[in-house]
Image (cartoon, rainbow, N blue to C red; front, side, top):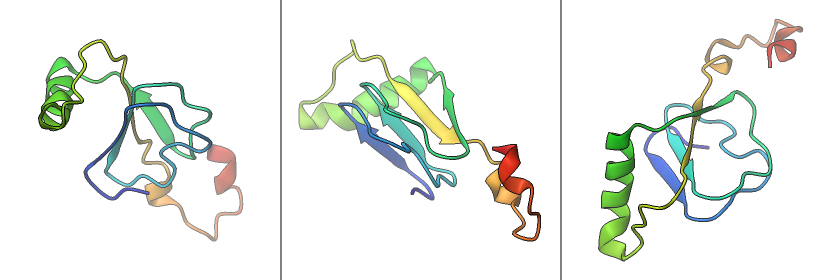
Length: 91
């Protein structure tokens, strides 16, 4: 769960990756077992990749050969109303 900021995984991710995102981002360099509910995988811009590398560089972890997957909220659950019994069918 992330309400803001970035979660960065240099390896893979397990089940329900990036579940319960609000406005945060999850970056994964490896394979993802499955996505969480209401998650979109988007292509990161070159500028965003540079920003992530800048975070990793002081730690000695920057690697320009990574194939990043960036996950963000699909924003459908932002408007979920519990009284709507069919809302789960949207997902």
